[in-house]
Length: 63
Image (tube, rainbow, N blue to C red; front, side):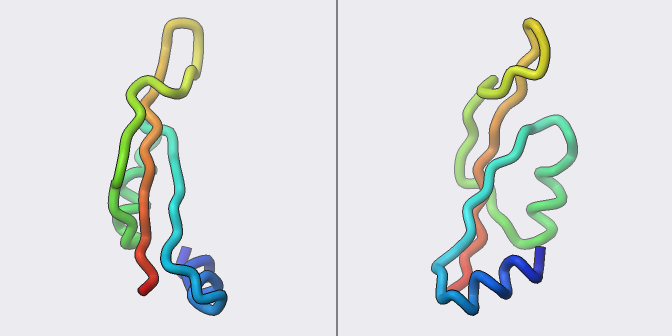
């Protein structure tokens, strides 16, 4: 993740936005990498018949 942020800084980007499916522990991983949750779409991802997960959007400011 640090390499991605470094490359984005080299390209003079303002930040990195990413999304992930909840329920896998990825939220804690991205937060540990410096990303902040900026939005959530409840039940946006269907994982099985009648089973849905939230989609969370994260932002990492680079400036």
